[in-house]
Image (tube, rainbow, N blue to C red; front, side, top):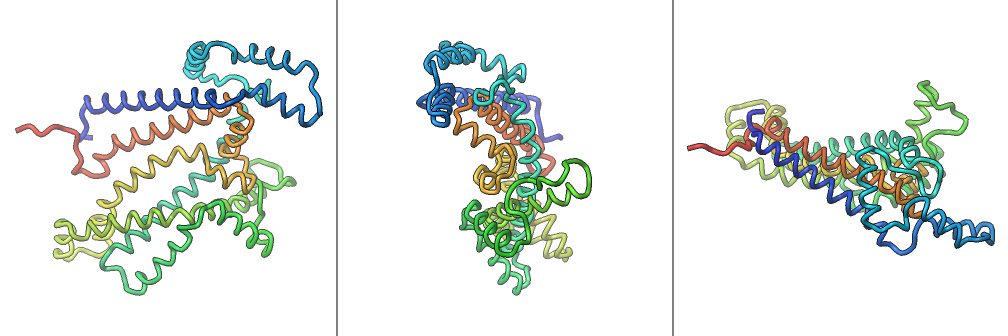
Length: 338
């Protein structure tokens, strides 16, 4: 990686740490600045269900002391960072005595699996469509057909998901509408569970892919049009290189860098998930878990998921920034010496 310097790597690593610190600090303060607290909210929910809770004020005061919520904010902040360094997110305030990580961990594979497939598919399909739309040598009939793929780009993915549930699941009965797998299937590495899991994931994946690939396509189309006028691209055509080589090596490779950067920025979504999509399809991922923790003001679970989002996003951007010289040899972080 000759384009990198030790000073630049150190600078980017310090920026990585600063990003995590700022993001995690905001995650600590924002829930605490909201009105109310999780203990009072939990007691109020019990009161609504049961009609009355005896000694409610004493219960609230006792549990606030138990979780340290009545401590000064700076004391809570120091304890918060000490727990982060120990990878200890504490107990769930809404589901005590369950650990916050024990709530997040089972949901994590579902969101990572669902969103990684959806993100990769939408990126690859969208970038390919956009590159073909912006390439001058694309056949005329293909240039007419490709823009129709952008039809769903203006539809919010959660609304499109509702339509797919009604049409595909209820009217046609082709695919299941909710959940990650059927209740009568035993979870495990067996063919019945895998096929059932895939069938449940098709509708959520399609609702994300069909509505998001248009954004990738439009961005890539503009980048590809600008590459068409570059000298190296015109020289490759004059030299008589094969159209496939010109398209991928001289066109897509040079135009895709901004799209790859946007992809790295969006990798945090693999943890947060598409909250509304998971909610609509009752998919047991971290997006739905994050939604529940926000509604119940469960600070610890919210912080656990949010910190994972911050770390993965910052790490993805750092890794991509360091790999740029390999993706495009023209990029170098060395200063020119005359």
